[in-house]
Length: 272
Image (cartoon, rainbow, N blue to C red; front, side, top):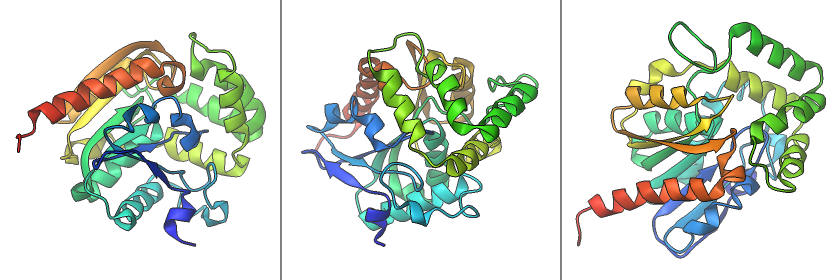
């Protein structure tokens, strides 16, 4: 199958600069519906599904390839080369933030800027590193997920959305979680939650915006500050919202953060 079909790639917009949005765990490209259209007048918006999610070719899912995030990063590099676009502005939510970092370290020529939205290089507390989960708590969370993914989803999704829940948003996100094959979801969760890419961060040479929520039980604001301290060319923007999916429950604040960063970037470019 053609790689564009494999990832169910869709594009729209009036601009020449490509702006790619990559979804996080339990969702697909549809999760950007409240954010991406705001950039269509200035950018070429590019959306896609990770293999195993949404309308991707689920038969292409390989349990050995996607045992770690490296398989997804390799997919991203291959996809960008197949699209043959100018350097992209890449927005990755949660685990896709780190997928973008890994891909940009390997192929920096494909990326203009990265936006890491509620991303984390490591989810486990380690000494003075505030990952968000004590090892025992993370083990319990993954144990519940392994036992019954659908019951786990029903239990965890309300806390992921946070307090400012719009009508229907909980059902929308829960339906997205439920659409994922439980075996794929279990492996993706393990690949994300048990990963530790802190040592890779100094290798990133692509400029990055770090957008972290003020209250996020999965990727605390302290993780954003850690990323900012380790990424040499980075900007930190902590938005005043609750939850792990700000592009869903706080799209206005998310759009504003992106516009602030992109506007500063455009104004710093030499004028023709």
